[in-house]
Image 1 (tube, one colour):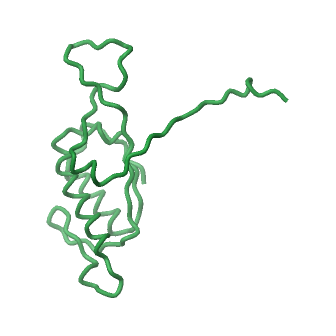
Image 2 (tube, rainbow, N blue to C red):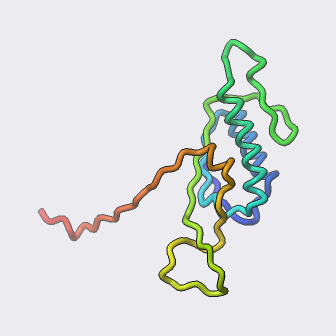
Length: 136
């Protein structure tokens, strides 16, 4: 499942998405995750940490480890669930207009440290190869 992050998303809708991923064993990709407002990202940290903690203590032969709590709801966990996030760089601009040569995107938030700790960072570079460069 892929979800495009937007400032209009609230913690309840994200909680419902995490519940669905956790219960079904699905994987989700949250695109432009740092477009969410900082307060929502903060609550999201607690929600996703519940999923991560449940998956790390899950034991197939012990049913007591098969449940997690998200937003007060008990969820039967399928430990094959997972989540990925994509982000664009943050611009910290103090002026009403920013120069066009600044790297990053307006309207992006820094992730809370607790949320950063739940994901492994990696850099993706996209290279466009033009067919005209290749001659037989």
